[in-house]
Image (cartoon, rainbow, N blue to C red):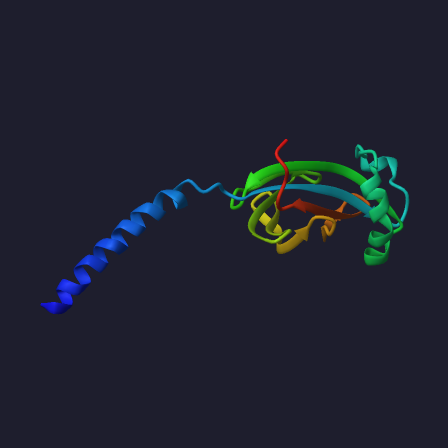
Length: 167
């Protein structure tokens, strides 16, 4: 009886504290991630006319990154095919159609400091050609060598901003 009498007020205090803290957790803002994906075609020779691809212009960020790509993959030519951008909450999947009748899916799973952990999936029809868990941070993109396409292979570069400023 004494234990019940002593714990009764304690249970009441814990209940009140839980009810006060619960609305704060419910109204917490979800983590937002801004990211981009660049799809390149890597080849050993200049892109032939038979490829029928529409190259995208290279920007300064990609131009600065090309020496690292050449060192990593050893191809001579890198043609930018597509560039995609998204801003989603952690856990939401962004999908884009990419060359070769493929679907690129990127899902930010978690954020640690300035690093975003993604699930990347490249689908061709119902078959998953590529499944990967990658990490990208601001200034340190993730690079994935993908499947064959046209006269070379697809390279996917994912840039991330874990804590974007509101636009």
